[in-house]
Length: 120
Image 1 (cartoon, helix red, strand yellow):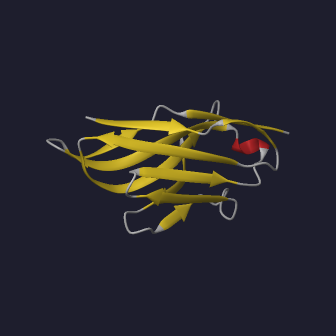
Image 2 (cartoon, helix red, strand yellow; image 1 turned 120 degrees about the vertical axis):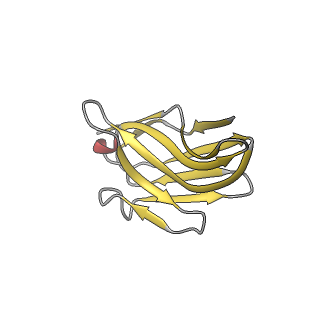
Protein backbone atom coordinates (compact mmCIF):
# COMPACT_ATOMS: atom_id res chain seq x y z
CA UNK A 1 0.00 0.00 0.00
CA UNK A 2 1.04 3.57 -0.70
CA UNK A 3 -0.07 6.64 1.19
CA UNK A 4 0.28 10.28 0.15
CA UNK A 5 0.08 12.97 2.81
CA UNK A 6 -0.23 16.57 1.72
CA UNK A 7 0.37 19.67 3.81
CA UNK A 8 0.92 23.38 3.47
CA UNK A 9 -2.35 24.75 2.17
CA UNK A 10 -4.14 27.69 3.72
CA UNK A 11 -5.35 31.25 3.33
CA UNK A 12 -3.04 33.90 1.95
CA UNK A 13 -3.40 37.40 0.56
CA UNK A 14 -2.80 38.06 -3.10
CA UNK A 15 0.92 38.48 -3.74
CA UNK A 16 1.81 36.15 -0.92
CA UNK A 17 3.46 32.74 -0.90
CA UNK A 18 2.71 29.20 0.20
CA UNK A 19 4.65 25.96 0.04
CA UNK A 20 2.87 22.65 -0.45
CA UNK A 21 4.40 19.30 0.46
CA UNK A 22 3.39 15.76 -0.42
CA UNK A 23 5.12 12.80 1.20
CA UNK A 24 4.72 9.29 -0.12
CA UNK A 25 5.14 6.27 2.12
CA UNK A 26 4.52 2.54 2.06
CA UNK A 27 5.85 -0.35 0.02
CA UNK A 28 7.56 1.85 -2.55
CA UNK A 29 10.09 0.43 -4.97
CA UNK A 30 10.48 3.45 -7.20
CA UNK A 31 8.81 6.79 -7.91
CA UNK A 32 8.60 8.03 -11.46
CA UNK A 33 6.87 11.37 -11.98
CA UNK A 34 5.49 13.52 -9.18
CA UNK A 35 3.21 16.46 -9.72
CA UNK A 36 0.46 18.79 -8.63
CA UNK A 37 -3.01 19.31 -10.01
CA UNK A 38 -5.69 21.73 -8.89
CA UNK A 39 -9.43 22.01 -9.12
CA UNK A 40 -11.33 25.22 -8.62
CA UNK A 41 -15.09 25.24 -7.93
CA UNK A 42 -17.04 24.49 -11.07
CA UNK A 43 -13.92 23.74 -13.11
CA UNK A 44 -12.12 20.63 -14.24
CA UNK A 45 -9.00 19.40 -12.53
CA UNK A 46 -5.93 20.78 -14.30
CA UNK A 47 -2.22 20.10 -14.26
CA UNK A 48 -0.18 22.70 -12.38
CA UNK A 49 3.33 21.26 -12.48
CA UNK A 50 5.14 17.95 -12.84
CA UNK A 51 8.68 16.76 -12.21
CA UNK A 52 10.21 13.56 -13.53
CA UNK A 53 12.56 11.25 -11.69
CA UNK A 54 15.38 12.89 -13.59
CA UNK A 55 14.38 16.37 -12.49
CA UNK A 56 12.77 17.62 -15.69
CA UNK A 57 9.93 20.01 -14.91
CA UNK A 58 6.86 21.21 -16.76
CA UNK A 59 4.44 23.96 -15.74
CA UNK A 60 1.05 25.21 -16.75
CA UNK A 61 1.33 28.52 -18.56
CA UNK A 62 -0.72 30.20 -15.85
CA UNK A 63 1.86 29.46 -13.14
CA UNK A 64 5.11 29.58 -15.13
CA UNK A 65 7.57 31.89 -13.43
CA UNK A 66 5.60 32.03 -10.17
CA UNK A 67 5.52 28.40 -9.01
CA UNK A 68 8.45 26.03 -8.56
CA UNK A 69 8.17 22.27 -8.23
CA UNK A 70 10.93 20.24 -6.63
CA UNK A 71 11.42 16.82 -5.08
CA UNK A 72 13.51 15.15 -2.43
CA UNK A 73 14.00 11.57 -3.56
CA UNK A 74 15.48 10.51 -0.23
CA UNK A 75 12.26 11.58 1.48
CA UNK A 76 9.88 10.55 -1.33
CA UNK A 77 8.50 14.06 -1.15
CA UNK A 78 7.45 16.60 -3.74
CA UNK A 79 7.10 20.32 -3.06
CA UNK A 80 5.33 23.19 -4.74
CA UNK A 81 6.60 26.66 -3.91
CA UNK A 82 3.93 29.15 -4.89
CA UNK A 83 4.89 32.82 -5.08
CA UNK A 84 3.03 35.91 -6.25
CA UNK A 85 -0.25 34.15 -5.65
CA UNK A 86 -3.32 35.42 -7.42
CA UNK A 87 -7.00 35.14 -6.61
CA UNK A 88 -7.39 32.76 -9.54
CA UNK A 89 -4.95 30.33 -7.93
CA UNK A 90 -7.64 29.51 -5.37
CA UNK A 91 -8.39 25.79 -5.63
CA UNK A 92 -7.96 22.42 -4.02
CA UNK A 93 -4.47 21.20 -4.86
CA UNK A 94 -3.85 17.49 -5.33
CA UNK A 95 -0.58 15.64 -5.31
CA UNK A 96 -0.21 13.09 -8.10
CA UNK A 97 2.50 10.44 -8.27
CA UNK A 98 3.39 7.47 -10.46
CA UNK A 99 4.80 4.85 -8.14
CA UNK A 100 6.07 1.31 -8.44
CA UNK A 101 4.85 -0.41 -5.32
CA UNK A 102 5.62 -3.92 -4.14
CA UNK A 103 3.24 -6.42 -5.67
CA UNK A 104 1.37 -3.71 -7.60
CA UNK A 105 3.63 -2.37 -10.30
CA UNK A 106 3.46 1.21 -11.53
CA UNK A 107 0.22 2.91 -10.49
CA UNK A 108 -1.01 6.48 -10.24
CA UNK A 109 -1.75 7.69 -6.73
CA UNK A 110 -3.54 10.86 -5.61
CA UNK A 111 -3.29 12.82 -2.40
CA UNK A 112 -6.35 13.81 -0.41
CA UNK A 113 -6.18 17.43 -1.53
CA UNK A 114 -5.29 20.62 0.30
CA UNK A 115 -7.21 23.88 0.03
CA UNK A 116 -5.40 27.00 -1.13
CA UNK A 117 -7.40 30.21 -0.82
CA UNK A 118 -6.05 33.52 -2.08
CA UNK A 119 -7.86 36.63 -0.94
CA UNK A 120 -7.91 39.62 -3.26
